Amino acid sequence: MVRLEVEVGGLRLRNPVMLASGVVGVTGKLMMRAAEAGAGAVVTKSVGPERRAGYGNPTMVEVLPESYINCMGLPNPGIDEFTEEIRVAKRGGVPVIVSVFGGSPEEFAVVAEKAEDAGADAVELNVSCPHTEVGVLEREPRVVRQVVEAVKKRVGVPVFVKLSSNVTSIVEAGRAAEEAGADAVTAINTVRAMVIDVETCRPILSNRFGGLSGAAIKPIAVRCVYELYEALKIPVIGVGGIFSWADAVEHILAGASAIQVATALTKGFSVFKELVDGIRAYLERKGFKDIREVVGAAHV
Ligand code: SIN
Image 1: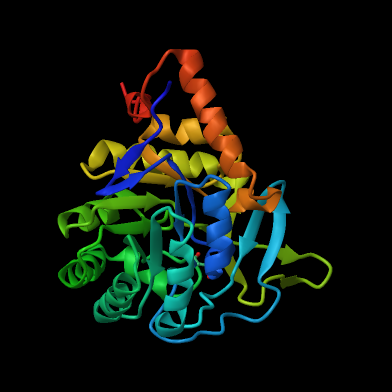
Image 2 (image 1 turned 90 degrees about the vertical axis):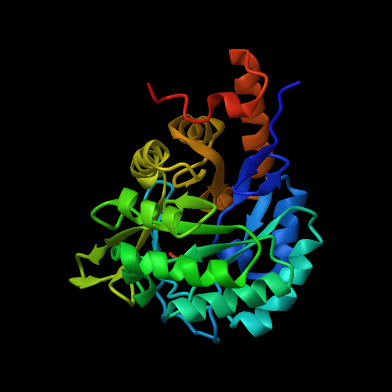
């Protein structure tokens, strides 16, 4: 029997396949469904200090097969209202990781503390949304450090930091997070992108710019995971373009201790079981006993 349990930054997961922050994480009931469908952990939609409407439509467009650009604009009800969704999500029986954002290190800390009080098993700091003011935080490693330090002072649960490729060096941002005490990094957030309608001669998305997710970004995500694994001591969680067990294994070989899926949920909740079964079958076929044997195995 192959062992699929992993430990990521102090969090134990029954398997390495997590729900990524995104539309499914808006309600506790949907996160429970992800857990029931086999997810090893769930990450909520990013939540901030106050209610926020997000951008007007259109906010999402398919640009390539299995690849979308979104500019939701971090819509959320604010942490005080969202605590009820965290409580409901906990009934799924798997770790609930609350994705947190704020306008300053102090705001991140306040939201993270409220999330922990509501039962969050970990927090994932979103410093990398590519089309809102939040994304600029990641461009300055000094600011990443300040955000992580502020949150670490206020919470006892593991702190993950979500990074993107929209910076000169994701490794520098990762190092700043690690030095400030982060327990893991998640890579990558969506890739800053845009799409223009040739008939109207205008950008399609209301915000003009958005974040590209799905199949198109997998090679970028794998490269980032590989670089972070080489540079950091803390675990890396891989996300970006994972639809099949082979995509997941590629991230793991690059160095991901666990992986997250979001865009693949367009195919339904069955993706969790398919990925877990596929990873297990691959490990068995290759003669491995424990998934940890292949984490980072692509490094020579
Ligand atoms: C959004 O709500 O705009 C997406 C969040 C993100 O990409 O970080």
